[in-house]
Image: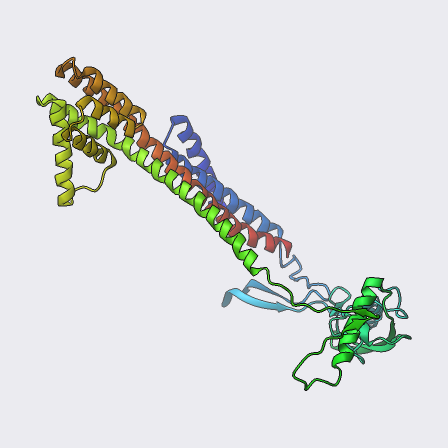
Length: 430
């Protein structure tokens, strides 16, 4: 308890201090965790303090009759010689006296009869399912049932209408009641009557009877025989047609639609990954071209230098495939095939449709005639802006990663709270 209070005070104090000083988010989370677990520890300690197993008279309360036995782990100290911190006590439930036992058994007989009837009105007219409860009087009495005719009433309590005669069937029910090693047999009779059926129910009942009569005494035959008529009406038996083919057809359509959506989603993800890669590589590409332009190369020569360097590094396995340089490679081959430099840059901008690349191509096309020096200055400014964009993208990616980790962290915190609070609540209820 003292440790939890101290943990709570330390966590709360440092949290207030951290909030005032504008400390890092991670440090605040540490103090919040200390505060939370300190609070939980105090709650557990208070709940345990309210639930005393041993009272002031050195007594432990038994469970009520039918509640079962219980175990308690206590500390035992005998003088100064023997001490145990983990002594197990087996405490039996409270027992009923003889008079109470007889009263409980008598009530159990009435409850057994009432529970047995279920939705039936009386024992003289049982037409619906009956029930065999295994325990009575809130678990104090166990019950074991037996019938003298399971053809009429099945072991699960359902009524077999085909086994009931016109006058009904008398059945004896026996239930053996047991309470605290005392057994008592209770017997009663009930009459099973045919259920009043609708015209359709009567037809199905007669069909079941006709099937039974048609195959009675023919258990050794190779075939099961079907009646041709019931209630004077002709019966036509047909095999049930399987709709498996239709189901497969629908499954095929569903699978096709799912694959279509999956393909579109995959294309969308690939496009998003491509755009993200293009944005990340933009500052690098602009910086390389700016550096080569500053060294006195023309834009076409600098472009060729960057592309050929990329190709050589790819062959040597130094770098993998990079989207922006693949697009630059296409533009390089277009210029080699006779496409004008300006037109090749414009096509590059169309393929790399992102806003930074459109701006880059606009700078190239507008300054091809104005001179190399002005273009170099503009590209230097563009490179600085591009690096700022990349920094913002990296910061955004970090925030997204932190957001994705938030749910697992909350689930772990919830699990820890459940592990702590559930045993405490269970102890409090006992």
